[in-house]
Image (cartoon, rainbow, N blue to C red):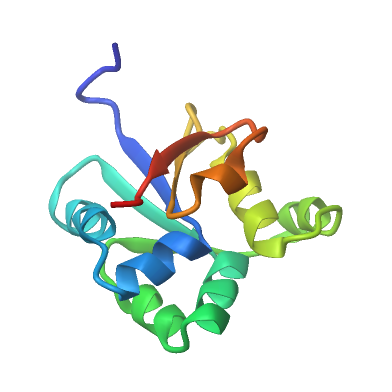
Length: 129
């Protein structure tokens, strides 16, 4: 059982961002919690933000402007990890979901396409209705 006082770290992948733009209730709840509740943290990666905006124009600007959403930059270490993969959005999100000093247990990936994450070492939150 997890500690109810432990911070919750969630990363929206590109499909979750697009789903939020289409009014997905689960994505909207995550965004609200990150803004209103202490201990809830919501992230998006720069590469996934670009891909979400390509799939649904305007999504990137909208998501980046939301209070409570932190955009994770593509730093050198992330860029080297992303360079080895076919999908920059998936690779950057996968990299960001791994444990860090700020997120010792890593982060959960919120997605509208959970099958895309099969075989990857991450916890997934399925946003499909």
